[in-house]
Image 1 (cartoon, rainbow, N blue to C red):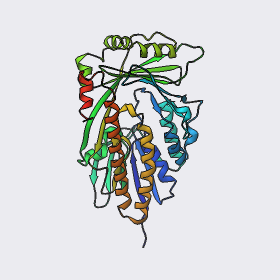
Image 2 (cartoon, rainbow, N blue to C red):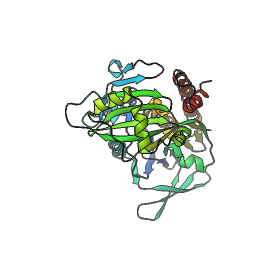
Image 3 (cartoon, rainbow, N blue to C red):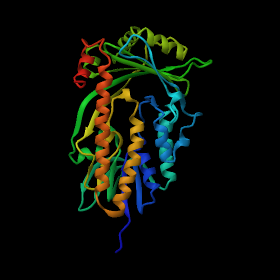
Image 4 (cartoon, one colour):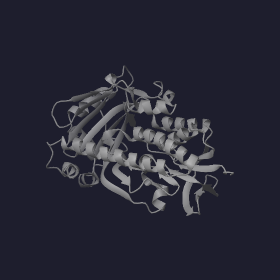
Length: 374
């Protein structure tokens, strides 16, 4: 019996969407693969990936994108967390690969380019407007850069649209929020000269925890991870208040100023980046699935967002390839179970990590986190 060629639509041009498109293309399935994304300007938030990302990139045939001429190798982290003495997490002894501070815009663009070179149709500047459920398909309507509407009839939709979960939420799928922190970030231009090592530095305080690192392109990131309650109560989105809070860290402030070679000024602008610990009630359904932050999102203390996206992309590729072959949902259900299992494991890590810091148990930020630590 003749089986018409399938159309698989992937929503989102970040690592989850692009890597899933690459993973599917490597399976050689008889389907048109479409990657539709807004390609909107993103805040220049720095991203660090651990050595665990390297095997995932290698599995997708994308390891060459981790180019040391573009992305800055990260030797590990030094942190004051739960103790007054710095602790070290050394990436050099990890046999799986290297850690990197990413040029995130370049990384995302290179992943999309790899998807296009794999035969995936790229549609840039498409913004989802409406979803219609047909008998065995979905019709998705998009606004396009030419200010016209475009539609795609998809046999299967992969929602990789980030925390918004634009497709799944339109179907009425609930998002379960367990916790949320928010990073208040400043970018600092480095002074020229022999660079210090590109370690990530972390220090806890009563209002949350600070992290900072050098980034590609002679700049650095300095950020406070707090929650909305503390942010509002102490006006931490105000550069003057943010800078005063930084001065109280002493050790962290000193480490970052030495690493960047400058006295960190009051920033002209701060960028806010929410990091919810959340998961959809279900990450698969009738002819759809969600990957990356659309499916589940993690606290920024894990530095695992991109690694999770890459791993899920590989798993989703396997599941969708099986679905294309036999039409059954068994592989999709296995994918969902893996996402749920990984999220449960993450939440245990979340509890263990925040439970380690007991010196500020009186403060609202740490009390709120310890609610999840039991």
